Image (cartoon, rainbow, N blue to C red; front, side):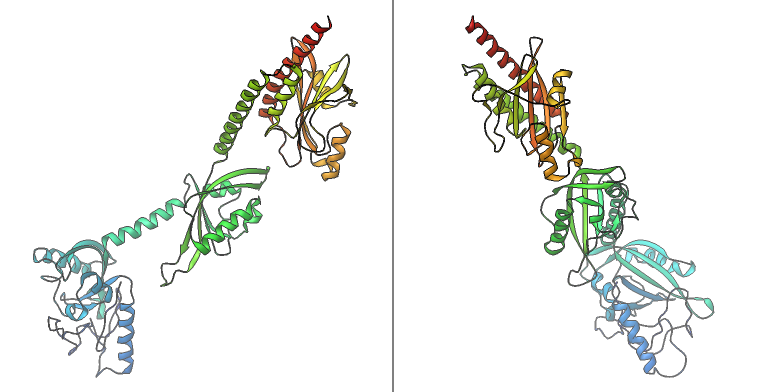
Length: 493
């Protein structure tokens, strides 16, 4: 609200304050008019005694500066309804200067239509008879004749002996007030329990405000998370998140939401989540130059959706691979060539190595495999089948015994890279193998062998969906192997 420009001796009056003497000071300016000779303020009361000294002048100048520095429009009336104060914000909203406003009686004919003047003046001056503040909405007139709807807060000013000496009125445009109320309501609603996380981060990238959703997502309480570095909450992915926050502070918000995969440290252990995030740079509205206050970070947990999307993409790819494999296999004259070709298609995106061990009597013999030291196609073992020396409890032997599938991994107890290599060598697998999936080959009610898929340590362990895919591949390979044996048996006859 703007401020009034004072001339002469003026005592600053607030609600229910008492001046030294009631009444208006003599000789402090008459009504303002078109000639612009009116004083910029007429005090509600002045001090007793002679002329204004330097202290009074300083007080008047201070009052004028305070009123002119306000962010809301302010005017004041004495007990007779005469305008005594009029600040710069009031001039900005209505266009009437302090020289033109101060000294007028009421708003009639200049700031309010004459038809509305009596009602407006009555409601404003009614504040003299009631304690506290009263809120009203009026349609006022600008100097150019246009109308503006304002919301006013008026309160009485008490004089000597506690008697009402006048009224002061603060007002602002209704749309500006509504915009402010909406902004406050929006910020409060966002920081309540809404369906997405809201975190306000300061310039040091530490949370200062956290709503309920974000507190649950981060695994803490709304107050317990404040001021803590994000690195204490996020085990993996914090570098990317902090880089995004720093970029927003320096350059502004990105044009589209970003997705971050993070691993959180919780009481139940570590869990991996995907957050779709949006960012806003926060700047102080009270400074001429934008001063960053931090970043508003809004996010939703989309882990379930992303995992479902990844699974759908994986299933689509694997179905396509099996379709292409079927078309290729149908052109192979040799059933074992068909089996190895099928395994080449199955390996893409699924595993790093594959081993085909077939039953010969009571033993498993290595029949086909991918290279142990480098990526390559699955080829039949040259020079004939080689018996494999699997020890008791080997996953391939377990698969035969169970007539099903077995998953295993080197795990954290393997002791790093060297330990994982020793774990793989002990099981007669390539040294880089860290995860294995063995599934039995069955055809016409008989066990024909075992198919083993291997992954390196930089890949995830095999899961249940992987087992279903491996069993589908094994069923097709078993059919090709059974056909090869049938053809070979027929040729021998």
